[in-house]
Length: 307
Image (cartoon, rainbow, N blue to C red; front, side, top):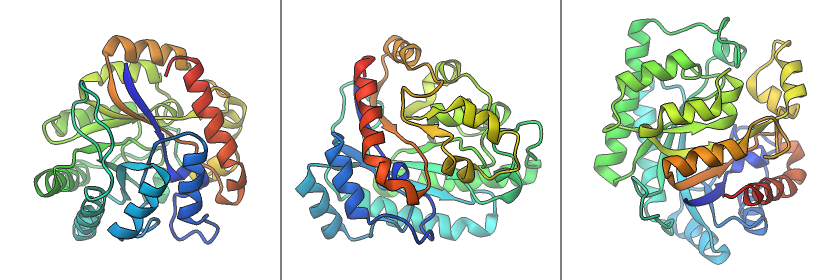
């Protein structure tokens, strides 16, 4: 395998840019470097400034690069199209001017990517991990979401040469097995790839190994997480938002949870996956003083099992 392990600001609790407790983005850059990573995601829109000169200097001085930007927004509403495309423009205009990530010989598409996630629906947030109680979109609203995804992917590709990768996410309208299957039918791989996440897959009741193998032909980018099973079993018995569960420690350093990473390594070796894998561990930003130690634990564990 020719795989590069990167990380993301969510490991420091950076998910909602309105949260007053977020650490400074420069601190996150410092700790990404200190933990031994060469690359990272940009984080949610509005966290890192859209200033090419300032961000380029911050990356270059630390020997870092940006592997992906993120659309983390309501993909369902047709009224949101203008905002989604504005964010696509601004994110892609930034990430394509920053220091470029390396490219493996067998990598399907060059980084940086644009990772696209649906978010912002209370009725799904409180049903994260519960397929039986999560409402599904009707055909019209599902089609509207597909149209928004196509518009994002087409703009990123045609204007900036950026590959969009769709990320099923706990608490959004693309989370469970039936929704991923429908997504795969409705968005061809020529339009967008997949960024599958081992933690969100497990959280949604799927086997990460089987899911990665099932969608191997769509797999352009991967996120790695791990899950603390006792915390997971407890929060599944509560009415709780996804990020509230994360604040309670449902995500843990890789190797400390229940996901079988040696089996994932064996699968990705067999699939000859080439490219990037990003380590994530969502948490409360008020606990970000433990982030450096945790992302280093994750990186060291992955190295010990062959990544």
